Image (cartoon, rainbow over all chains, first blue to last red; front, side, top):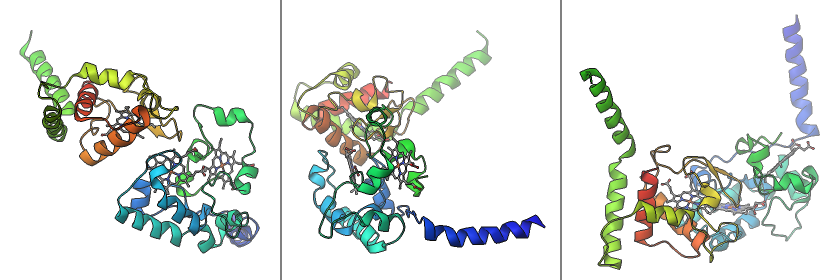
Length: 153
Length: 139
């Protein structure tokens, strides 16, 4: 008799949970983005920034946080199309909605790691960020091994 | 020595050779040799020793976080490295551990451009590229 009861509980949880804490982060599925934006760091999911931020980042790849990340124009076009179509302000739900609440209407943030939602969830002592396995806040994978799949628990 | 142990040795050697050698890497080295000769008529051959110096030396002119190739690839190319700017792990670059290294020209060129700029503050030339690959192929 336990199986059906558990199944019912499952249905209740599944319908109730997203309403309370919808933190979904759809993983990047475009192979060009995974290859070109995932070689130096993980391919960051587009929901963390608004479309205009991705446009600005892709416009300035020659000086990408001090790095030359230049790509051929046709590759940039593919990446821009994917990132802007799936940006936080376009998707408007899950973690994207949460992060976008803190982006000024005309603001063009270049970092996910400066968003107040991120800072609040990652209020760790400086020693954590200096750990040789972490190096920088943007190294999501150091602490979230399944970050690439959009799982940040 | 018994013929069986001779056979075993012969098999082991051919396995090592098959493992390390790759026609794509050889072709790449020949192309860099042609270029190196164009830059310097006195060029004779690539040197693993010069490649090791390029790999280990501390340069200035590049990014302060990456004064040397070892900043990301570690002092032992057979070990996994870590990107000093992003923290992302990097698979070993020694050919004995990662046989696919230096077989894709586009990938190799991309990194010589990017990584040399980051460390030396300029692109690497054909001589440096050939030396570096020769060093890693023996690692």
